[in-house]
Image (cartoon, rainbow, N blue to C red; front, top):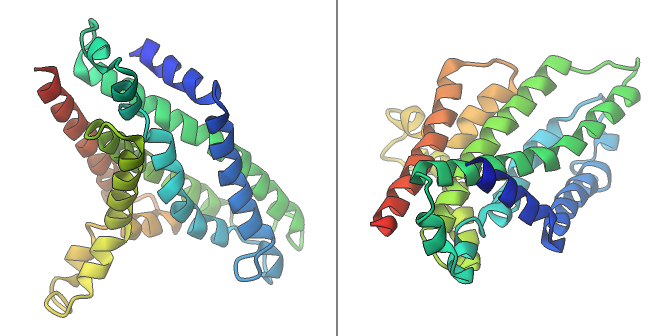
Length: 243
C-alpha cells in the first residue's frame, strides 16, 4: 500500500497537470474571495471566512474528480491494471493506497488557504476579532467532505477505462450526494412528514451542521459511512475484475 501511496503522489506532482489543478483551485478561490463583489471578504462589514467555506465545496465538485479520475482509469489506459492486480497486494491495499494518496493531495492543495485565515485575522477590527472556533469547525467539515468526495471519485475511476468518463461520473455523483437529497426532500410527497429524513441523506446538511462549530457524532458517522461505503464498493468492483 505504501508503494502505491507514494507512487500516486509522485505521479501527480511529476506532471504539469498536478500543478495546473492546484493552481486553478487556489486562483479560483482567491478571485472569488477577494475580487468578486458578491462573495468578496473585503465587502463584508465584519471579519469572516463564511464565503470561503460556502464556495469551497462547489470548487471541490470539480477539483477532486480531476485528481481522482486517473487513479484507475490511467491504469487501464496504460495497460498496467492487470499487472497491478497480480501484485502481492490485496485489493483493499490497492484501493486504500489510492484513496489516501488522493486525500493527501487534496489536503496539500487546501493547506495554502490558511493564508486566508491569517489575512482576515489581520483585517479584523480590532485585530483578531473573528470566530476562530467556527473556522476550525468549518475546516474539519471540509476535511470530512474531502474524504467522502475522494472515495466517490476513486470509485468512479474504478468503474470506467476513460478518465473523462470517470471525471463526469464522479462530478455527477458528488453533486447528487451533496444537493440531490435536499432537492428531493422538497417534493410535495415528502413535505412536512419525511422531508427532514430525506434531507438527512444529503452531504450538505451534515456539512452545514459541522460548519456551525458543533462536532456532532451523527455528522461524523455520516461522512465516515459515505466514504467507507464507496471504498468498499470500489474494492467489490476490483475484486470482480480480479477474478
